Length: 135
Image: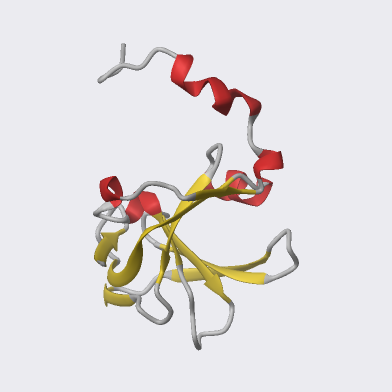
């Protein structure tokens, strides 16, 4: 499946390919901190399939909880988190941030990882009132 995506301000756009339903939700504390949210959802792109069609992301290399070095790509202008990938610029496998993917509604997570770090209230999220706009 071909997908497209961009940062919030539009300075960076990309195209990629992925297999359907190749979405993972990560609950690790690093993903919580780096996304400023309770978890991070990623679409795993096919190897070497990401093509930046406009702009180039800035990268920050961090050491994951696993000990692996991971390059975190983001827009230097608006700060949108775009991906994580291996540190080497060769043979990259991108975990594209689901929120920046244009076709995000077509994807459904197939697995959750680092679930021991999941925030306990997520299990009851469906019980919290939901509104279409700010109440």
